Length: 530
Image 1 (cartoon, rainbow, N blue to C red):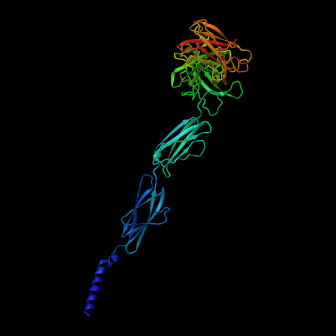
Image 2: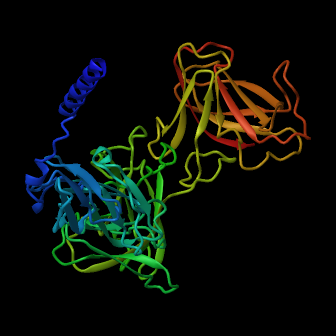
Image 3: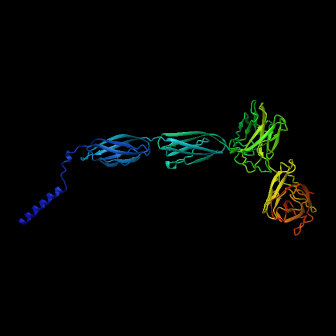
């Protein structure tokens, strides 16, 4: 019996000890405070992220349920003394806070939350125009997005810039020339925006030939010295457009008009030493007026060349051709190494303005005809470019004994091949084939440095070099002109004979043939059929 009593006593002691270990005494609950005075503190970041920290508070509360007030449906539970963080879009919200106490009671309040974004600040926009294309870049503090309106429609090209991508370029090409307003709207994710506007003019730059008929080209002229130029209809009718230039009373004697702007033409004028020609149509009020054309490098005005032509018609159109190798007195000579990309016209040059009115049109580099027999080097419309080989060096020059005549100068440079020579024209030779009859004779005027030098003349078919014939003549005069006659019925030894079935259309001349170059200089002119 005592055994059982002892067991029960031990059990009772264990039970008592167990209750004390688990703190089952909850009598304090009955004395705890009820939930009340529930509220929340909102901390809103000012960086346009929309991040809000919500810290609930209240009396007697041990936890809270926070209904965020946006599209989030499920309340967020947070312990007393803790906070939650949530990202809101810009707007106004009703945030509901329910506090829970130990007795199971609650206390609820609703607070208004307003989240506003800072509008973009320090907006910087760069607008660059090239012909008909505009390039736009933008950067701004707090901006997350940009809309670019180009002014030719209501559409925009959105570019999702972030600060890491600031100053990216977006481009747009306009369908036609004109003046447009480019508008850039910077957005920060909120209602407020920052706007930039710029008015631009887009057009293709003026280029040769200048016809004044392309609606997408900017034909703005740059007048100086008192000239006044304006685009008008052709005074002679026909519906075309031309440039009208007035030299008003008081205008300088050097008053003129630069065709285009300060940057000149996008492509330089194609001028060569023996093909430095330009032409312009002019409608002059009188005969005998000096029209000056000047071309220059827009980057270096000292690289220039100019020449003059007198009008020969009044009250009607005429085409004036300017040979820029024949420069005006006291002005720089033509230099083939210069870049000529800017042109100016001077009307009634050297005379003070008196109100004379001129019209001009179709400014262009003159197209030169293909070289052909006879070769005189005197035509202003023929391309006298020659093709040297083997070490020869040829240039178009003034006759060494007659400054009214032009000829070709060929130097057989030191070290030049024994077969060095010069082909008249390019790879395609003459414009027409030499008549296919009996073997012809040809003459060439030659100015040789010595007597007894072998001058070889060779004819061939430009499409087949094996179809050729050549013959030689020795010089008989030194330091003066002589006419050498080449008879192709007598071909040079070991060379093909004349063949009437071949189409000879290419001609080459060899000076001091068979001898290596030593710097000898020859002049030659007037290549003709005998």
